[in-house]
Length: 70
Image 1 (cartoon, rainbow, N blue to C red):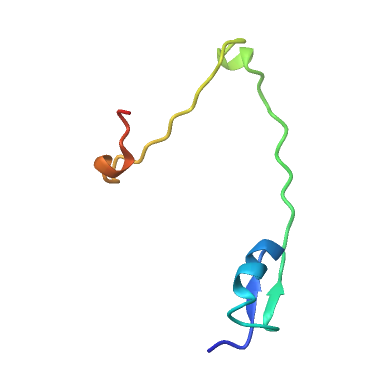
Image 2 (image 1 turned 120 degrees about the horizontal axis):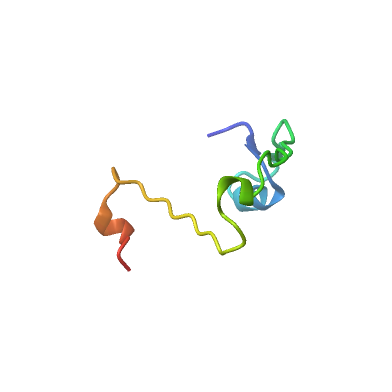
């Protein structure tokens, strides 16, 4: 049903190869992104040396499915 399948990694290409033999090609992402240098230190933003934890929860999602209380 397709002429070619382009995948971002050889791992994903291996998953598709049985379904489209010879038509799967690895096409890496077109640009490399380097992480930016931190502009402020932890002490400059008030964190200090203690452990910092980030918790992210989408309140528009189903809270039963996400189970944020456990």
